[in-house]
Image 1 (cartoon, helix red, strand yellow):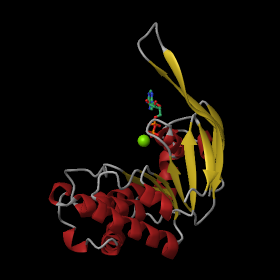
Image 2 (cartoon, rainbow, N blue to C red):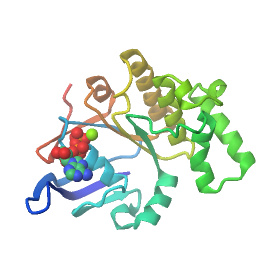
Image 3 (spheres, helix red, strand yellow):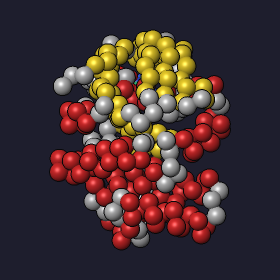
Image 4 (cartoon, rainbow, N blue to C red):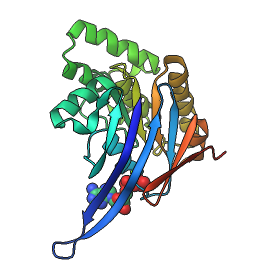
Length: 229
Ligand code: ADP
Ligand code: MG
């Protein structure tokens, strides 16, 4: 499902004249199989988000290649990648990234509008997906009228609505209290087991990583694989 081959990336930081290069990823290679749930762990600053941004196409690596399914995504230009994401990848973020001026329904509907789905079909699909995350009765609420856990469920619905084979998540439980977190983790696990959706989840949370079928640890720009339980 995902193949990361020899990916290296450095950022230039600091003011002009005294620019410094920090090597964040150093020849990183790993793969994720269809239906797997893989947790990426590692200290803050170890390059987890950078790696996810490269896999998501928001950042071009200095070197290396990422393949998702049969597509070498690192070869796609911005427009092509945007189109690719719309059909193949769902995202869940720590801070939900819902649009505050849109209701739960409208937030979930947005990817389908971008895909060009007709209105009637769209409405059915959004309702069905909000039902699946247990929030149909909240569909006309704005994000500010929902709890953190509910907002994260809306963002999961937004990720799910296009039936993506792959969901990428960056600290999905990072803003939630521990009880809400447990609910959300169970729900993600269910999606993985019942619908075979592949998950790649960044976390520094032990609970999340224990749930994964596999753990990848990042340190010093490189990865270490294994079961750390
Ligand atoms: P993590 O998600 O594991 O906490 P990140 O991938 O966000 O780590 O960051 C890894 C390193 O790269 C950090 O030292 C961070 O400061 C640096 N970094 C991340 N993004 C940028 C950027 N856009 N410009 C410069 N440095 C960055
Ligand atoms: Mg991060």
